[in-house]
Length: 150
Image (cartoon, rainbow, N blue to C red; front, side, top):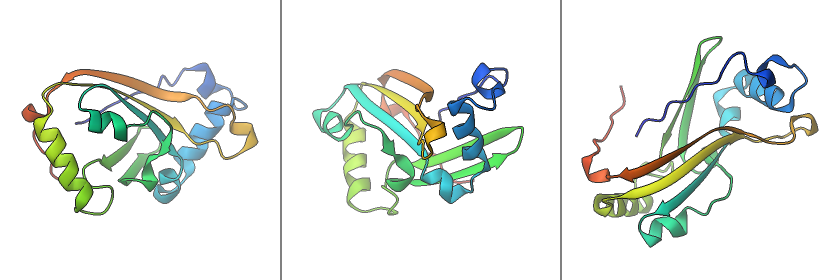
């Protein structure tokens, strides 16, 4: 699945140089790809779906770049692209990919939510706030196609 989000460039938190959310965002953009992996947090929850997915999705912030294969590409003043491979846990196959494939093949309706935020590592970046959140209903993985790298 592809998830696209946009930030309002006129948002007050982006315009205020002293706003904690603006500080952490600008530092995130200035970081290299490896540093971004250590700052992007995701909270994922399964509201309706197989119990095994509900058990794995524990509704707590996770530094996702430490758990999954993740890459980022930033074009200043234009966009940032972040990709994550949710099928293999960053290992390029194995147990996680097998379990994910088995479960998702049989999921006919999933209701889940995702929230992304940035890890505050400095006092002036607190409190942490959500960058964006999304909710998905009636997701049928049987109708999805596998994306390949360009």
